[in-house]
Image 1 (tube, rainbow, N blue to C red):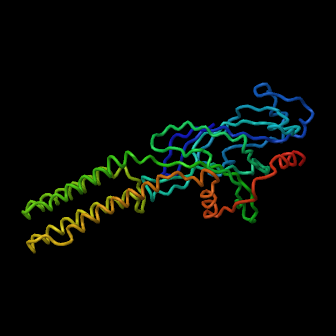
Image 2 (cartoon, rainbow, N blue to C red):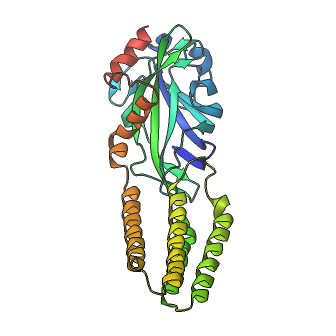
Image 3 (cartoon, rainbow, N blue to C red):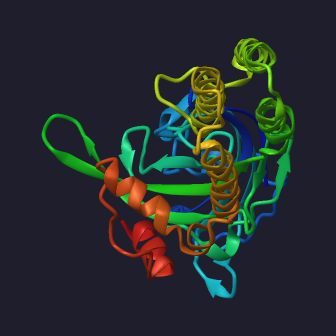
Length: 337
């Protein structure tokens, strides 16, 4: 179960709340009867080898709190018997960090990932995700993004450097893919710029140079004022986003219209590139619309197998570890150790 609320792509953080389930083997409890959740008051005293999960257990935590929800002595997982197996439910609440790329804004897609370290407290554990017990049911509280379905994008093992001696520990990364809803920006920004360009093209039908320049310069000033008004709706990044490029293209087409009107006043005839300006504008709008449809496509490969996320891990210097296999054997072996 998970709740996602505030996603701040500019500052690179998101807020979440989820249950972190841990199964571990307590050797001293192999002969005891199973104890259900809520009925085991002395579980902390009975489990001296329990993992000490805290905020430092999450590699990308910024402000995280961990609270114990319940513990149970189950002795099995699924249909497999594991003597001494303890199931621990932890509520994890807080803010996590994430690297966001805003180059495709407002058609940007992102991975929200949770990095579980294998080093809890002073002990090193071998973490193995049980895929059958991973249940992501999102309570999404922001209208600006939607979660790709299925919500679980990838579960992967990765390694990280620990300490100055070059030693490595492994971590488990769970990631989900989200995409911004672009309809509001399309309606309030892109459609307005399209309308301004269309009005500017009406100056081609006027005979008076004064009328032509009056219309185009007024629309140019309108576009500048419009850019200043919507500036707070755009991400404050140091590189150009898709929305920035579209607004620049609108300025460029207005500049071409003004240039055509000036040449008309000098040569007293319509230049041959008038039709070229209109056709190029129409082709640009068609190409932009086609690209946006491509950008809207769900990240099918990422949702199915997490391939894109694995590539992101590799590009970040995190090497993917061995495949996730033989989970039950590793749990039993960990209990023997």
